[in-house]
Image (cartoon, rainbow, N blue to C red; front, side):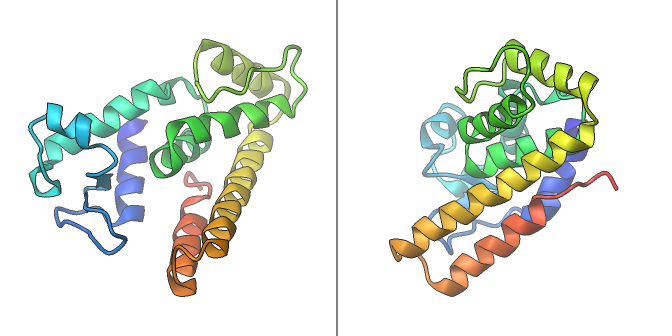
Length: 182
């Protein structure tokens, strides 16, 4: 499942072997050098140019394992949780998933800590067994888009980017927040 998710993400991000610097960061294969500098240094990557396909694959595999993506029994939900985790942070994506699960009034509310561990997976499987999977998938996609709108509103308010750049972000995030299995 992860290979298929990654192929979609690579297409969405237009990930290639060039260093992207337009937003003020050095990014290669979708990995922002400045945000992952310590991890990359452990792998002997001291600049974005040093990031190889091999390093990219290790990076994404570790992220997927930490988020327990293979334990999510829905391709569309796994894709959206993982893509958001890569784009906005694992904790943010995990919190959003837990908030969505809690909306289904499962017997015990999850602690919203952003960790997609055994309790979150059990609660998610419970929701899957009691409701149509599409319900939580749609809820997560809508919550994801709403989160992106709040991020953009904050960036616009702080004049961090031009309106054109913010619209580019919005279009990219809108394109990514969707069902991919249909």
